[in-house]
Image (tube, rainbow, N blue to C red; front, side):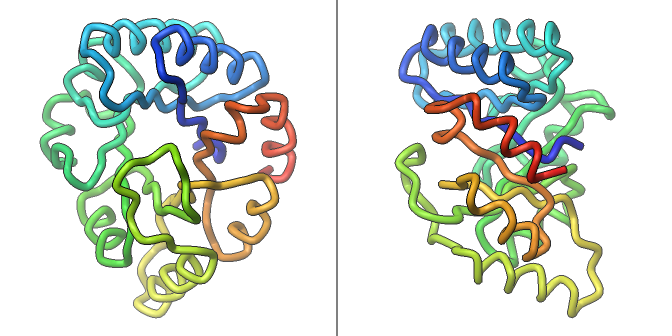
Amino acid sequence: MEKLQYISQGKSESEQKLNIHKALDHGIQWVQVRWKDAPENEFIRLCENAKQLCSNYNAICIINDHVRIAKMIDSDGVHLGLNDESVSEARLILEDHKIIGGTANTLPDVLQRINEGCDYIGLGPLRFTATKEKLSPVLGFNGYQSIIESLQKESIAIPKIYAIGGVRLEDIKLLQHAGIYGAAVSGQITGNPSIINEFKTIMK
């Protein structure tokens, strides 16, 4: 599973599509299409375009929140927030081989996601980020370390955990040291897509 995810950003359909295209041009192999509060018809159209773009680049396309749209456009999977549909419901709607990721903010959330059988967990936020409204309490590096250590103490197999929420290039080595599998990045890649190669070099 790819270690670097790009979470799409943009205030309009055209801006979103352009940012996704730029990220793919610069070598991203995993895109999560995220556009909160978008008009449904525009979001569906964006998802269709993103799926086609990702297919052209042999990249993974994951849809944020919307299981039925993920099914409709035959995306590679869906990412579910804690207040979205359950993983079991999503599994019934999507095919067995589709990827289902889930958000977590605390150790109990991580345990819940493990029990639900998520393919990966987006754990965060690392720090404050302006891209998310109603931000959960910030974890910081110590928060990640504490959660990983708690899993190890209980002899629970460490799932594929991605750090999310304000993650920057200079954070990667510290996150890897804490036992985090990968990172989901939005702002820094949107602002400077050429940085993708630097992320990938560190995350090999």
